[in-house]
Length: 197
Length: 125
Image (cartoon, rainbow over all chains, first blue to last red; front, side, top):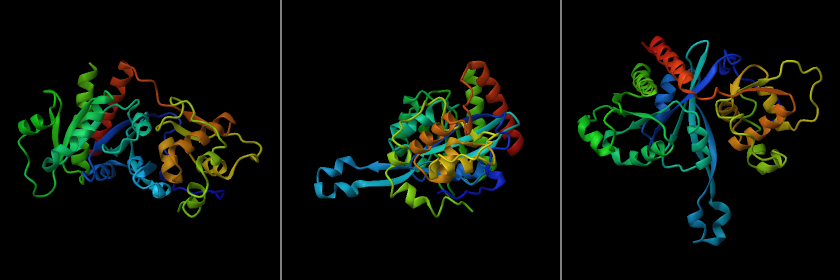
């Protein structure tokens, strides 16, 4: 690693000397479309970090296998969007089933809010991540990722299933489409503004 | 494109993390958050010679502009904790400048949220 790494000029934060960096979380269960949404909005190819995962529960069953019970997995991925000369926005995505406490604390600390991506056909898979977001005290909006051909569940039923507050915004979006994804984020930010008054 | 790629296994897998960090612990969380912006200090009159290969690599990466701590970890593929410790040491040594995010406060939040709202509308409207 001693050699000089070379990144393209666009990889760097152009206004980094003066800009304020802020972040919004994009969360949801495995394969719900988080990375797709982040990629649709981000001005850089999405990056990821890895965490070491120790499957402690299994090591007691097979002591001879203890050494091989450690594996790495993508813990979070993220993208960046220059908002203005003054603000640069980072979008951090992570699946809810990964309980890396340190990583969640790092992600949640100082976040403006969270966009929770849900698949209307797998609502129960979203419970864990919504629990985590509430646990960290973050305001959030629900974005229903509309895959081709999947019926949109009636909003009342979805609210009931997810046990949402009356004012929690629910929008549908296509995570592959930048404008549609941006609209979902705009809904979240308007809600956060309302909450801050 | 990225000089870290070919060398990554040696540092990330064949060396235990605390060797790379020289046994140092995690730095202050506020100072080096995921979105703290980092760049090399401008006036390095003498080229540093006491740095480890990993520290030198991070310093080189930060020479061409600002990157967030998260982006530095993403590009180097080093564990986040290791990156934070190395960046902290380089900052203490005067090699790096770090810009932590502003403290959250209601008024600042509203200004920032309005700016984010307008920026998203302008870019994707």
